[in-house]
Image (tube, rainbow over all chains, first blue to last red):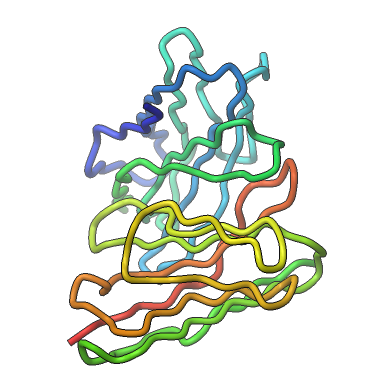
Length: 117
Length: 111
């Protein structure tokens, strides 16, 4: 069965430091997509970054990068130079057959990141 | 650019009352539409998705239903709310090869 696991319920990081949020996934499909979303206390879900299962290079988007290790089935999010505004809940998600008729996402349980000044 | 509108933002309803949450998308045609629910402190659970007008797929058995009367309109309904229906409901849209884009959500409290 397909599953996303985020083992860190909460993380602290000092402002301006880098932080890694862990995500492992389980699927037998060959074609899938991995996503990270940010959810501030206001509740909206903000798309951050995407990695396709066939992409050979790790995705990067500004201060966000995705450390994709296919053999280990991990897709960790790295945030560089943390800012106070990065404090939020972060969700890892997976889409099966990405680019097909639908992009249904299954989500992990999230990691609450607190950036300290 | 594409935008998604979801309302109301908050809702308090008594047990046994009906529910109607509405979601509309602008700036895109024939999007896939989704309803997710987030219980307190939990991840998101997919409730329904739709690939076209009148086409609804349900992911989990529940007290809720969904309808898509127009291309860019998605409605979540219930005839009689249960306490367990409380949660944060998020509507989302996508097209082929795009990530999901979410609305701001509706916080539903059933009392």
